[in-house]
Amino acid sequence: MAYQLYRNTTLGNSLQESLDELIQTQQITPQLALQVLLQFDKAINTALANRVRNRVNFRGSLNTYRFCDNVWTFVLNDVEFREVTDLVKVDKVKIVPNCFCSLVGHTTECTLAVWPCLQMFLNSLTLISSDL
Amino acid sequence: MASSANSNQVPKVYRTVMEDVINEVRELFLDEGVDEQVLMELKTLWENKLMQSKAVEGFPTDEQKALQAQQQQAQQAQQTQSQTQPQQVLLPSAQQATPQQVIVQDPKIFQHMSAPGMSTAAALALPAGVAPIQQFITPQGQLLQLVRAANGAQYIIQPQQQMLQVLPQMQPGAVQAPLIQQVLTPLQGGLSQQTGVIIQPQQIVLTGNKVQQNTQAAAMAVQPEQGAAHVQPQPQAQAPQQQPQQTQASQQPPMVLQVDGAGDTSSEEEEEEDEYDEDEDEDKEKDGGEDGQVEEEPLNSGDDVSDEEDQELFDTENVVVCQYDKIHRSKNKWKFHLKDGIMNLNGRDYVFSKAIGDAEW
Image (tube, rainbow over all chains, first blue to last red; front, side, top):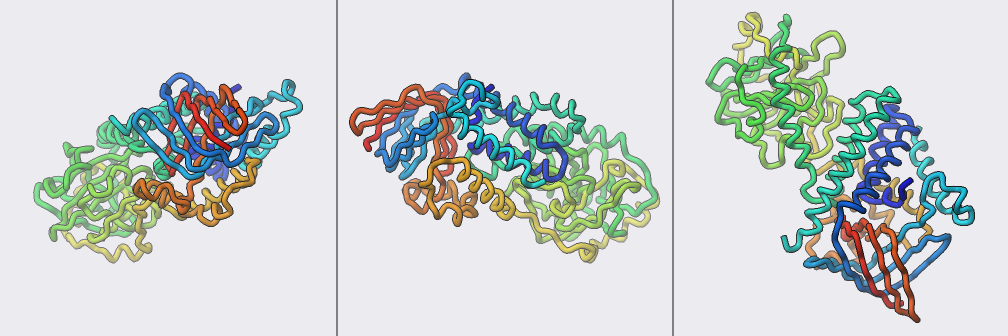
């Protein structure tokens, strides 16, 4: 099972929206949509691991940090992201390193930390089915 | 290459992921008994949304190539499919070398005469002033013809079966012929889906991104596949009336296609997406202004020059989603060792395999 954390990206969200539209028009079932998302998780994880080979450095000031149920969330201000030649400056950025529990069906191994992940999972189900 | 190392990578990576996903789920779709068409629709929707988000540069190139390839294939198929039908014919001067007018006889029924041997995909790039008629075929196998009217105005006639992806072929700025604005009542069932062509010379219609399946959205008169290659003696006799009857447009209100990428619908989705984000995130520090500014996000993201990108006005929430190798803190100095991340900064997407950062709290 692959991490679901990439669902909340441009790529992931556009896929979810497309799936939602198809569900609305009843061209696919929510179950199928979920399968597609799982497949997306696999594909994006593989792609990032194998196809991307670049390094980025960044520096900024830490506004807040949170570590709850194995999920880190950082909010940084005035950050500079530097690649070899690129420089991107943002005034506020949120970094969400993965929760290892964002795995579907992984309930047996992380019982304590399962709650936020389960919540996310349920939310995703709700999102898919809310328009029915 | 300088500043484009990452932006070169992103479209490719995304394209790879998309192809992977679509191919893998094809089987799932078939298992569930869902038509391949739906899969294609999913792909289209997905690509369109990505293009709309402008988070990725230079994305839809594959789609265009595929479209053109399909056009060429479909053209051959189309010519073999032509059937004669006793219907009024829109004669786009298929056989003639001189410019001809578009004839609208019956607002509802048109027959498109496909000119054998017309160029297909090339028509897209041609100004259409060169040849009287050019054919090209949409991925749906519909025949598009570019017709030059006697008055010099150029029209595009399209079959109206499914107006999918017709318009993405027409790149903004490359369209020289005023596109047909209106869609006449689409024929249902029995008839070979021949529909009227409405020509409005001064209107230029480009969807850019979203070409929807419903006929109104496409706003292009579409020619049926079957009728494409017809040559009928009857219609020919009638054809030479040569009066572009724009009144046919009155059948349906003129539909103008959005060039700017259908901001309307996306705003709703954006909003929904934004709420979803909020539900999911534990972080309560999201700007309250985010919700109110959601509609603007797809419009203004990426528009600003670099100087302005730092300002608060820029309402993209810059998010980095990644995995971490190590998070380290010493007093108030934090060090981040991250990996395999996707970033959305100032509206643009970036990816990295490794990221190292420092921050002071």
